[in-house]
Length: 74
Image 1 (cartoon, helix red, strand yellow):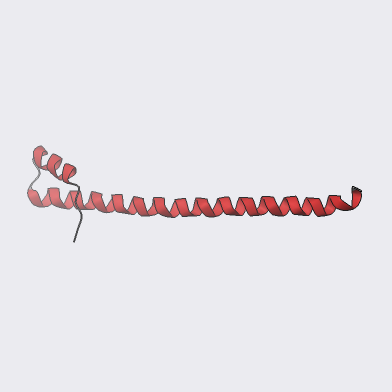
Image 2 (cartoon, helix red, strand yellow):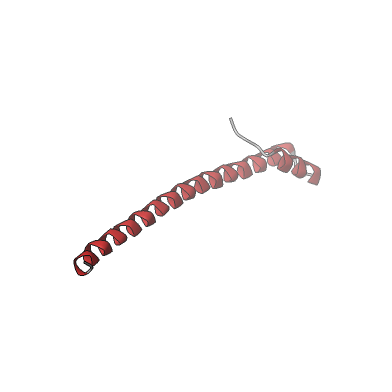
C-alpha cells in the first residue's frame, strides 16, 4: 500500500492536475519524506555512537595521564 500526502494531492487537484498525476506526485513526495526520516534516524544513531566514542577516548586519556603522572607525584 502506498502512502500519499493529502495536502499535496489536494493542492495539485486545485491547481488543475488530473487525478492520476496528482496521486502519483503525492506518492513520490511521501516516499521522499519516508526516506529522509530513515536517514535522520541513522544520523541520530551515529551521533550517539560518536558521543560514546568521545567519552571512551576521554576516559582513556585521563587514565593514561594518571598512570604517567603517578610515578612523579609522591
